[in-house]
Structures are given as C-alpha cells and as structure tokens.
Image 1 (spheres, helix red, strand yellow):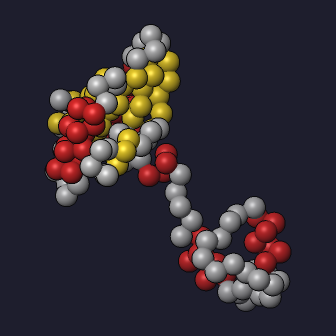
Image 2 (cartoon, rainbow, N blue to C red; image 1 turned 120 degrees about the vertical axis):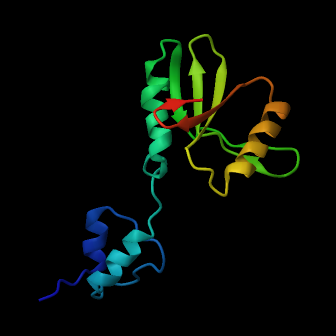
Length: 141
C-alpha cells in the first residue's frame, strides 16, 4: 500500500516545496513529493566542495589570528558588469579582511574565468588581502 501525502501532511513537516504549490488538501503522490524535495536548494555548506572543506580545516582553522571565517560571504560586483564570489572570507583579529579562492588539483572549465575574476577583483578592491590557493596532492600552493 502506498502512502498519500496531503497538503496538511506537508505543512506539518515544516518543509517548503518548490515548484507548483499544493492548493488544496487533496492527496498527493509520494513519488512526486520526493521529486519536488530534490528541487529544494542546498545550503551553502552543502554546496561546498571537498577541496574547500579541506582548506578550511587544514589551513584556516589552524590560524590563531582569525576572528571569523565565512564561506562565500560576499559577492563583489566588478566594473565590467560581472560578479565574483570568493570561496572564503576571513576576518582577522586586527580587522583586515582576506578573500580566499580555493581550487582543486584538476583544472575545470571554470578555472580560467575564476582566475580572471580573482585578478580583476584584486585590482578593483586593493583594500582586501587576496589569497589564491591550489590543492596539489597533499599540500597547498
């Protein structure tokens, strides 16, 4: 026997379903409900790559001069109309702000565009400290 979800059941879970809203308390197919749940956007921490997570634990968490670390904390709008979001924003205890871009061992399609946006951001925002980190096997460059 299959379980039928009603709009009241869905509301009781506290979940938001993206896509077409359930307009009445008519029964809903559980298979379709599961499909809709897949469309719920992931949190920033869930979107973080293994390389970015490793960088946080191996490099950033071991520093004594750090007051706060935020994943994808700011988006910089460049003069050319494009935007760039550094992987990590580090606020040091002395008040300086660092923007860290983390890249893995493999050069993916986005590598060049990230390199360009990083370089342009460095020019347009010299008030920040800019750090480009690449994983090289077990070490960082």
